[in-house]
Image (cartoon, rainbow, N blue to C red):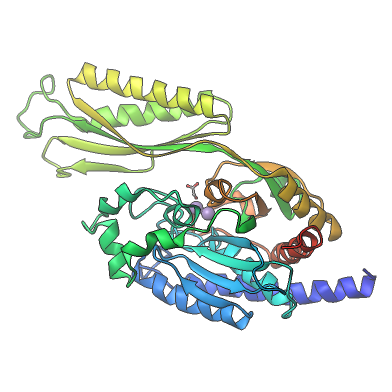
Length: 421
Ligand code: GLV
Ligand code: MN
Ligand code: MN
């Protein structure tokens, strides 16, 4: 490629990157809260997100559908009939009080990459997916969108309730979707040539090493549990300190142990992110406390040992304090390696843009963990400011997003030279 063509490509990508960031900012207005961004699975604002994302997909030349679990999919047809497809995507749901880019940027980059093709067709179709749910906020179970596409959706979750008591099944109906069609979300085996997920890094490595982009080599495994301590409610001013069974200090002891354990093991992340107290009244001894525990490590055995140790310690706290204790496993996923061949295509695309292609492990979970079970999968990380995420201060730069759009488009072009579709 001559220097002037390359510069023209860069100018185009710069314009598309500005648009991508504007679009992420615009989508942040679709929130369940009047202040900050919170958009959980199949919440009302997801409808207006689908309206806007769908319009951008159509403008880029895609046909748009929303499947039975609420994934929005833009289909960019191939240069031939009966071609297989490549998927690019990430998620459109958020955590509470979220940043504007986690998940959303990956979907928008995919749309901009298709737009940059200017209508040129490839020997395979490309589908841009906005997964409906990755964070697991509303039903305490992540990856509802991607498991439906991968054919590993757990039907037993349909009866699970959200904080308002709506079941997952009802939430699907409330959104105007048909729960009986979940089986139709599945992407048939062999139809998918590759899955690529662009995503902000959510960590500091790219920034520290002064790289705009990186390739994910593997995604750490994660276990999410809900632990309940039950004690005895009673009067805060009359039940003697020595005889009360207070569930809250038991839970606090465990939370401190989780933190201590996490600090002692290299590369282990151990978090108590949620605690609910009942009856949650200042003059009543708490009789029930639920706390979430999230454990992650790139090595599955280390994670399993951590889970066992933490639960043994929870049991010993409960025994010592004469409290009852129960565990509910909410999600358990092993570490997932990315596909070498597809990552090499990504690397080639980065080299084509004269960008370094550093490799890094993702501590955060991604839909790529699920898609890797049905397709050769790769992930492209984009530098984010300070490594901050799951926080309103999430931030990306337009030049970095421009790099990501050019590399994503370059990935499709490079891949098209190595496949007949
Ligand atoms: C998703 O962001 C996760 O919790 O890893
Ligand atoms: Mn997230
Ligand atoms: Mn994410």
